[in-house]
Length: 128
Image (cartoon, rainbow, N blue to C red; front, side):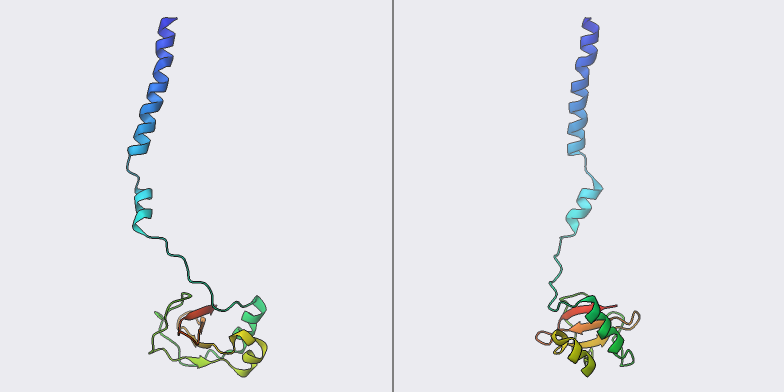
């Protein structure tokens, strides 16, 4: 009976040793997350419905000079001065009033329509 008790009394000791090892062992996954700080995305300055996005996509001419492939496409990013901005067509301005004052450019490669805020020349929205 004493031998069975000594056999079972080792289990808590083994569990404690493994727990300590798990706590103090370096984990690549945890360290990798610490290297990259979490950056919250910028809030949209314009809120478009799917219907409004469709109206813009159908009425914007994809023919104007396109911005380079590395042009910004992330909401909140500044748009460099060397990227030519275009006014939205009158049909879009009439049907999507909140986009009336915004400009846009077409990104080469994926033909994304990038709406640019008139106040600060930052990406306001992207329509693929």
